Image: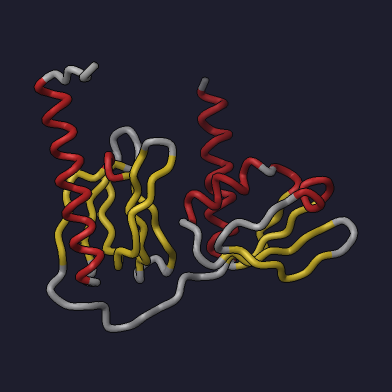
Length: 177
């Protein structure tokens, strides 16, 4: 049986395919792109990245790349993109993403499996210190937040402050409800 698409579904699928084809072309050209995307309900953000790859996870497609302004890798769901434009010149510098150092404790430290962009720094009986060099910082912070009291961010200080601000925002939202 063929699936019947409404005109709106067909238009959305065509738009999504066009975005994917455009991003594939931009990745192959290795030029920076400026991406406007919806970060929250009513928040639109614009960043410039050097696109690296398209990935698919749970039916969603993401563009990932390095953002020199933030000195970190970003991963953006293509369904949240509102506009894309490509630069005519390459980035002048090839900065590396800022490494984030965090420590895990207790049972979590014993059962933790390294993610692709992570490596061990140190370990002892009760803790495990890990360096993350490539994950999207926002996604990493959300993952570390799940670990609760079994996790501590050591470096860099800006990421520690961002993590604290994130937890404060969550607590403020809970108090409002």
